[in-house]
Image (cartoon, rainbow, N blue to C red; front, side):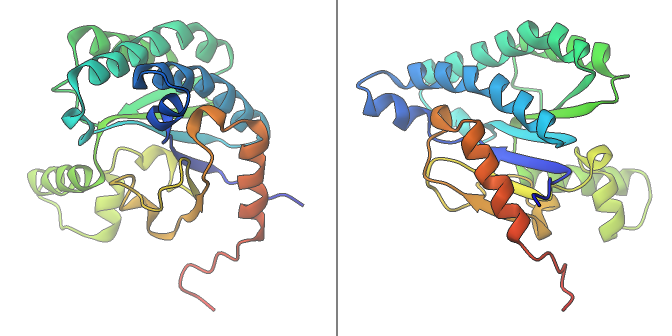
Length: 226
């Protein structure tokens, strides 16, 4: 019997390499990867996943060429605007995590609009990490705890993380062949099961997602116990 994780995180890696292998610009791969997002989101929720966190743009990705960053920002805005109605229709709540100070006013406006409209949706949770870094998230959480005059504890840090309403990820998937978390959900992922695949993100389809679910089902989650 396949066990379905309640919360899944995905590091969507490999768009640029996918495009390079086809003799195309990296932006071509990002567009293909963007189209793949809707398919995987729909399949994950149909499979029984309740919360899905996608690593779309890290705080370190600003170091990439301006042309590539601009394309990514354009794709993110287009995705959020395009799928707002679909998210509402399917009772999906959107939450964008990360710092918004470097994002364009247009992108922030699109995020705010979708988050507000979907705030009462209770079926599923789609969390998109934009200008996100796990270390920065922990620092921000600690600062807020101090500002509130509270004691810094494990539970308080957990309660002040962006993903607090959605629980910790049971499974983190990384596509593209790299074997690292790259500053993604570092605190929340302390006991997450990790699944790495060489499949590049644009080629990560429903079958590949199901392979990750099947592998998760074989894991023995002890959380430090015997």
